[in-house]
Amino acid sequence: MNRTAVRLGVLLLAAVAVVAVILALLPPSSTGTYGKEDARASAVAVKKLGERDHELTVTSASLGREGKVRVLLPAGWEPGSGPWPVLYLLNGCCQSGYDTWVTKGGAAELTSGYPALVVIPESGPVGFYSDWREGPGWETFHLTEVRSVLERDYGAGDRRAVAGLSMGGFGAMSYAARHPGMFQAAASYSGVLHTRDGNGGVDWLLGQYGEKSVKLWGSPQDPEWAAHNPADLTGALRGVRLFVSSGDGAPGPLDDASEARDEGEASLLLQAVTFVERAKASGADVAVDFYGPGTHSWPYWRRGLERSLPMLMGSIGASV
Image 1: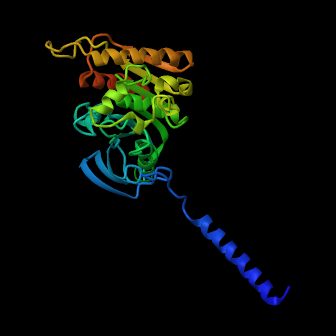
Image 2: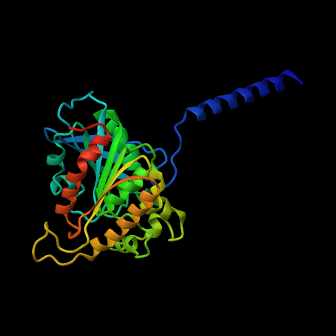
Image 3: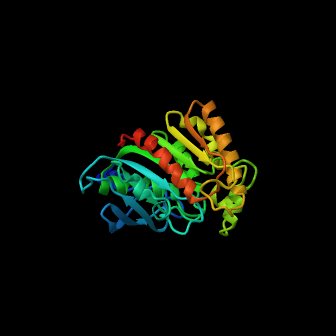
Protein backbone atom coordinates (compact mmCIF):
# COMPACT_ATOMS: atom_id res chain seq x y z
CA MET A 1 0.00 0.00 0.00
CA ASN A 2 1.52 3.40 -1.03
CA ARG A 3 1.71 6.46 1.18
CA THR A 4 -1.07 8.27 -0.68
CA ALA A 5 -3.54 5.44 0.01
CA VAL A 6 -2.57 5.38 3.66
CA ARG A 7 -3.07 9.12 3.94
CA LEU A 8 -6.49 8.91 2.29
CA GLY A 9 -7.51 6.13 4.68
CA VAL A 10 -6.46 8.18 7.68
CA LEU A 11 -8.33 11.23 6.40
CA LEU A 12 -11.50 9.19 5.83
CA LEU A 13 -11.35 7.74 9.33
CA ALA A 14 -10.86 11.22 10.78
CA ALA A 15 -13.83 12.55 8.81
CA VAL A 16 -16.06 9.73 10.04
CA ALA A 17 -15.01 10.42 13.63
CA VAL A 18 -15.78 14.14 13.27
CA VAL A 19 -19.22 13.43 11.81
CA ALA A 20 -19.98 11.01 14.67
CA VAL A 21 -19.04 13.63 17.25
CA ILE A 22 -21.19 16.27 15.56
CA LEU A 23 -24.19 13.92 15.41
CA ALA A 24 -23.78 13.05 19.07
CA LEU A 25 -23.81 16.72 20.02
CA LEU A 26 -26.93 17.58 18.03
CA PRO A 27 -30.24 17.73 19.96
CA PRO A 28 -32.67 14.86 19.32
CA SER A 29 -34.83 15.49 16.28
CA SER A 30 -38.56 16.01 16.69
CA THR A 31 -41.06 13.91 14.81
CA GLY A 32 -44.64 14.58 13.85
CA THR A 33 -46.36 17.79 12.84
CA TYR A 34 -46.02 19.47 16.23
CA GLY A 35 -42.60 18.18 17.35
CA LYS A 36 -43.99 16.46 20.44
CA GLU A 37 -41.10 14.11 21.21
CA ASP A 38 -38.66 16.80 22.39
CA ALA A 39 -41.03 19.66 23.12
CA ARG A 40 -39.71 22.50 25.25
CA ALA A 41 -41.21 25.87 25.99
CA SER A 42 -39.07 28.30 23.98
CA ALA A 43 -40.43 31.56 25.40
CA VAL A 44 -42.67 32.66 28.26
CA ALA A 45 -44.35 36.03 28.76
CA VAL A 46 -45.68 36.79 32.25
CA LYS A 47 -48.61 39.10 32.99
CA LYS A 48 -49.18 39.85 36.67
CA LEU A 49 -52.92 39.92 37.28
CA GLY A 50 -52.62 40.30 41.05
CA GLU A 51 -50.35 39.83 44.03
CA ARG A 52 -50.50 36.03 43.76
CA ASP A 53 -51.90 35.67 40.26
CA HIS A 54 -49.77 35.31 37.11
CA GLU A 55 -50.91 34.59 33.56
CA LEU A 56 -48.27 32.94 31.37
CA THR A 57 -48.18 32.93 27.60
CA VAL A 58 -46.03 29.97 26.56
CA THR A 59 -44.64 29.56 23.07
CA SER A 60 -45.35 25.85 22.62
CA ALA A 61 -43.78 23.45 20.14
CA SER A 62 -46.30 20.76 21.03
CA LEU A 63 -49.29 23.00 20.31
CA GLY A 64 -47.79 24.73 17.31
CA ARG A 65 -48.85 28.07 18.83
CA GLU A 66 -48.93 29.96 22.10
CA GLY A 67 -50.71 28.46 25.10
CA LYS A 68 -52.05 30.13 28.24
CA VAL A 69 -51.44 29.12 31.86
CA ARG A 70 -52.77 30.73 35.05
CA VAL A 71 -50.54 30.33 38.12
CA LEU A 72 -51.74 31.15 41.64
CA LEU A 73 -48.86 31.71 44.03
CA PRO A 74 -48.75 30.70 47.70
CA ALA A 75 -48.05 33.12 50.51
CA GLY A 76 -44.31 33.49 50.91
CA TRP A 77 -43.49 32.72 47.30
CA GLU A 78 -40.67 34.73 45.77
CA PRO A 79 -38.33 34.13 42.85
CA GLY A 80 -35.84 31.45 43.77
CA SER A 81 -37.98 29.98 46.54
CA GLY A 82 -39.11 26.38 46.67
CA PRO A 83 -39.47 23.55 46.05
CA TRP A 84 -43.23 24.08 46.16
CA PRO A 85 -45.93 21.39 45.89
CA VAL A 86 -48.17 21.83 42.82
CA LEU A 87 -51.92 21.39 42.29
CA TYR A 88 -53.08 21.29 38.67
CA LEU A 89 -56.72 22.24 38.05
CA LEU A 90 -57.98 21.02 34.67
CA ASN A 91 -60.85 22.59 32.79
CA GLY A 92 -63.83 20.87 31.22
CA CYS A 93 -64.86 21.11 27.62
CA CYS A 94 -66.72 23.94 26.02
CA GLN A 95 -65.93 26.57 28.65
CA SER A 96 -66.01 30.30 27.93
CA GLY A 97 -62.37 30.68 29.00
CA TYR A 98 -59.38 28.50 29.78
CA ASP A 99 -59.24 29.81 33.37
CA THR A 100 -62.83 29.29 34.51
CA TRP A 101 -61.54 27.51 37.61
CA VAL A 102 -60.62 31.05 38.70
CA THR A 103 -63.44 33.06 37.14
CA LYS A 104 -66.28 30.65 38.02
CA GLY A 105 -64.90 27.98 40.34
CA GLY A 106 -63.48 30.11 43.14
CA ALA A 107 -60.04 28.49 42.90
CA ALA A 108 -58.14 31.57 44.08
CA GLU A 109 -60.29 31.91 47.19
CA LEU A 110 -60.43 28.20 48.04
CA THR A 111 -56.69 27.62 47.69
CA SER A 112 -55.38 30.88 49.15
CA GLY A 113 -54.36 29.37 52.49
CA TYR A 114 -52.42 26.41 51.11
CA PRO A 115 -48.62 26.48 50.65
CA ALA A 116 -48.69 25.24 47.05
CA LEU A 117 -48.60 26.50 43.49
CA VAL A 118 -52.01 26.19 41.81
CA VAL A 119 -51.81 25.84 38.04
CA ILE A 120 -54.69 26.18 35.55
CA PRO A 121 -53.46 25.42 32.01
CA GLU A 122 -55.28 25.94 28.75
CA SER A 123 -56.59 22.64 27.36
CA GLY A 124 -58.64 23.48 24.26
CA PRO A 125 -62.43 23.22 23.94
CA VAL A 126 -62.22 19.45 23.29
CA GLY A 127 -58.50 18.70 23.68
CA PHE A 128 -59.09 15.60 25.83
CA TYR A 129 -55.72 15.91 27.52
CA SER A 130 -53.98 13.91 24.82
CA ASP A 131 -51.38 14.27 22.10
CA TRP A 132 -53.59 14.09 19.04
CA ARG A 133 -52.56 11.93 16.11
CA GLU A 134 -53.46 14.83 13.87
CA GLY A 135 -53.41 17.97 15.94
CA PRO A 136 -52.05 19.56 19.08
CA GLY A 137 -50.11 17.80 21.83
CA TRP A 138 -51.94 18.77 25.00
CA GLU A 139 -50.41 16.04 27.14
CA THR A 140 -46.90 17.13 26.19
CA PHE A 141 -47.79 20.79 26.66
CA HIS A 142 -49.05 20.19 30.20
CA LEU A 143 -46.64 17.58 31.49
CA THR A 144 -43.41 18.54 29.72
CA GLU A 145 -43.51 22.16 28.63
CA VAL A 146 -45.59 23.71 31.41
CA ARG A 147 -43.94 21.53 34.05
CA SER A 148 -40.48 22.65 32.91
CA VAL A 149 -41.55 26.31 33.11
CA LEU A 150 -42.93 25.81 36.62
CA GLU A 151 -39.77 24.10 37.81
CA ARG A 152 -37.45 26.65 36.20
CA ASP A 153 -39.31 29.87 36.98
CA TYR A 154 -41.52 29.12 39.98
CA GLY A 155 -39.63 26.60 42.09
CA ALA A 156 -42.10 23.76 41.51
CA GLY A 157 -41.09 20.53 43.20
CA ASP A 158 -41.95 16.88 42.58
CA ARG A 159 -45.03 16.66 44.82
CA ARG A 160 -48.08 17.05 42.60
CA ALA A 161 -51.85 16.60 42.66
CA VAL A 162 -54.29 16.99 39.78
CA ALA A 163 -58.04 17.62 39.72
CA GLY A 164 -60.55 18.43 37.03
CA LEU A 165 -64.20 18.78 36.07
CA SER A 166 -65.96 16.88 33.28
CA MET A 167 -63.33 16.48 30.51
CA GLY A 168 -60.81 17.69 33.10
CA GLY A 169 -61.81 14.79 35.37
CA PHE A 170 -60.83 12.53 32.49
CA GLY A 171 -57.53 14.39 32.24
CA ALA A 172 -56.81 14.10 35.96
CA MET A 173 -57.28 10.35 36.13
CA SER A 174 -55.72 9.65 32.73
CA TYR A 175 -52.61 11.70 33.52
CA ALA A 176 -52.20 10.13 36.96
CA ALA A 177 -52.46 6.63 35.50
CA ARG A 178 -50.36 7.20 32.39
CA HIS A 179 -47.50 8.84 34.30
CA PRO A 180 -46.80 6.68 37.37
CA GLY A 181 -45.15 8.58 40.19
CA MET A 182 -45.86 12.02 38.77
CA PHE A 183 -48.99 12.64 40.86
CA GLN A 184 -49.67 11.65 44.46
CA ALA A 185 -53.41 12.42 44.29
CA ALA A 186 -56.13 12.95 41.67
CA ALA A 187 -59.75 14.13 41.79
CA SER A 188 -62.62 14.07 39.31
CA TYR A 189 -65.81 16.13 39.54
CA SER A 190 -68.53 14.92 37.14
CA GLY A 191 -65.69 13.46 35.10
CA VAL A 192 -65.62 11.58 31.81
CA LEU A 193 -64.18 8.40 33.30
CA HIS A 194 -65.18 5.73 30.79
CA THR A 195 -64.72 6.78 27.17
CA ARG A 196 -65.41 3.23 25.91
CA ASP A 197 -68.84 2.78 27.51
CA GLY A 198 -70.50 2.36 24.11
CA ASN A 199 -72.56 5.55 24.27
CA GLY A 200 -70.45 7.53 21.80
CA GLY A 201 -70.09 10.54 24.07
CA VAL A 202 -66.58 11.44 22.91
CA ASP A 203 -67.56 11.31 19.23
CA TRP A 204 -70.63 13.43 19.87
CA LEU A 205 -68.67 16.02 21.82
CA LEU A 206 -65.90 16.25 19.23
CA GLY A 207 -68.50 16.58 16.50
CA GLN A 208 -69.86 19.73 18.11
CA TYR A 209 -66.51 21.35 17.29
CA GLY A 210 -66.03 19.83 13.86
CA GLU A 211 -63.50 17.25 15.07
CA LYS A 212 -63.33 13.46 14.69
CA SER A 213 -62.08 10.89 17.18
CA VAL A 214 -59.95 9.20 14.52
CA LYS A 215 -57.70 12.28 14.65
CA LEU A 216 -57.53 11.96 18.43
CA TRP A 217 -57.01 8.26 19.25
CA GLY A 218 -57.62 6.51 15.93
CA SER A 219 -60.43 4.10 15.09
CA PRO A 220 -62.61 2.73 17.94
CA GLN A 221 -60.60 -0.52 17.87
CA ASP A 222 -57.28 1.26 18.20
CA PRO A 223 -55.39 0.48 21.45
CA GLU A 224 -54.97 4.22 22.06
CA TRP A 225 -58.58 4.42 23.25
CA ALA A 226 -57.94 2.02 26.12
CA ALA A 227 -54.49 3.54 26.71
CA HIS A 228 -56.15 6.85 27.66
CA ASN A 229 -59.42 5.62 29.20
CA PRO A 230 -59.45 6.01 33.01
CA ALA A 231 -61.75 3.00 33.48
CA ASP A 232 -59.18 0.83 31.68
CA LEU A 233 -56.24 2.21 33.67
CA THR A 234 -57.32 1.74 37.27
CA GLY A 235 -54.58 -0.81 37.93
CA ALA A 236 -52.03 1.97 37.41
CA LEU A 237 -53.66 4.11 40.11
CA ARG A 238 -52.67 2.02 43.10
CA GLY A 239 -50.69 4.29 45.39
CA VAL A 240 -52.48 7.43 44.16
CA ARG A 241 -55.13 8.88 46.47
CA LEU A 242 -58.35 9.40 44.50
CA PHE A 243 -61.52 11.45 44.92
CA VAL A 244 -64.55 10.94 42.64
CA SER A 245 -67.78 12.96 42.81
CA SER A 246 -70.88 13.13 40.63
CA GLY A 247 -74.57 13.93 40.82
CA ASP A 248 -77.46 11.91 39.42
CA GLY A 249 -78.76 14.65 37.09
CA ALA A 250 -81.87 15.54 39.06
CA PRO A 251 -82.08 19.21 40.09
CA GLY A 252 -80.39 19.54 43.46
CA PRO A 253 -79.91 22.00 46.30
CA LEU A 254 -77.46 24.16 44.34
CA ASP A 255 -79.72 24.43 41.25
CA ASP A 256 -82.44 26.92 40.41
CA ALA A 257 -85.95 25.70 41.07
CA SER A 258 -86.68 25.77 37.32
CA GLU A 259 -83.71 23.57 36.40
CA ALA A 260 -84.56 20.51 34.26
CA ARG A 261 -83.11 17.03 34.74
CA ASP A 262 -79.59 16.75 33.34
CA GLU A 263 -79.22 13.49 31.39
CA GLY A 264 -75.56 14.20 30.70
CA GLU A 265 -74.74 14.23 34.40
CA ALA A 266 -76.76 11.06 34.89
CA SER A 267 -74.68 9.36 32.19
CA LEU A 268 -71.45 10.51 33.79
CA LEU A 269 -72.55 9.09 37.13
CA LEU A 270 -72.77 5.65 35.50
CA GLN A 271 -69.24 6.09 34.18
CA ALA A 272 -68.05 7.14 37.64
CA VAL A 273 -69.65 4.09 39.25
CA THR A 274 -67.85 1.80 36.79
CA PHE A 275 -64.55 3.58 37.37
CA VAL A 276 -64.87 3.42 41.16
CA GLU A 277 -65.78 -0.28 41.11
CA ARG A 278 -62.75 -1.08 38.98
CA ALA A 279 -60.45 1.18 41.00
CA LYS A 280 -61.45 -0.47 44.27
CA ALA A 281 -61.05 -3.93 42.72
CA SER A 282 -57.55 -2.85 41.66
CA GLY A 283 -56.69 -1.88 45.22
CA ALA A 284 -56.78 1.89 44.72
CA ASP A 285 -57.56 4.29 47.57
CA VAL A 286 -60.80 6.01 46.48
CA ALA A 287 -62.94 8.55 48.32
CA VAL A 288 -66.42 8.73 46.77
CA ASP A 289 -68.98 11.54 46.85
CA PHE A 290 -72.05 10.43 44.87
CA TYR A 291 -74.23 13.16 46.31
CA GLY A 292 -77.53 12.39 44.62
CA PRO A 293 -79.45 15.32 43.09
CA GLY A 294 -77.22 17.70 41.18
CA THR A 295 -76.64 18.85 37.63
CA HIS A 296 -73.55 19.34 35.46
CA SER A 297 -72.77 22.84 36.72
CA TRP A 298 -70.25 25.01 38.53
CA PRO A 299 -71.78 25.11 42.02
CA TYR A 300 -71.23 21.35 42.37
CA TRP A 301 -67.71 21.43 40.91
CA ARG A 302 -66.70 24.24 43.26
CA ARG A 303 -68.11 22.26 46.18
CA GLY A 304 -66.25 19.17 44.97
CA LEU A 305 -62.98 21.07 44.95
CA GLU A 306 -63.65 22.43 48.42
CA ARG A 307 -64.45 18.95 49.78
CA SER A 308 -61.41 17.31 48.19
CA LEU A 309 -58.81 20.01 48.82
CA PRO A 310 -57.72 18.72 52.26
CA MET A 311 -56.97 15.30 50.75
CA LEU A 312 -55.31 16.72 47.61
CA MET A 313 -53.12 19.16 49.51
CA GLY A 314 -52.36 16.74 52.31
CA SER A 315 -51.11 14.19 49.78
CA ILE A 316 -48.48 16.62 48.51
CA GLY A 317 -47.37 17.98 51.87
CA ALA A 318 -49.31 21.24 51.62
CA SER A 319 -51.78 20.90 54.50
CA VAL A 320 -52.85 23.90 56.54
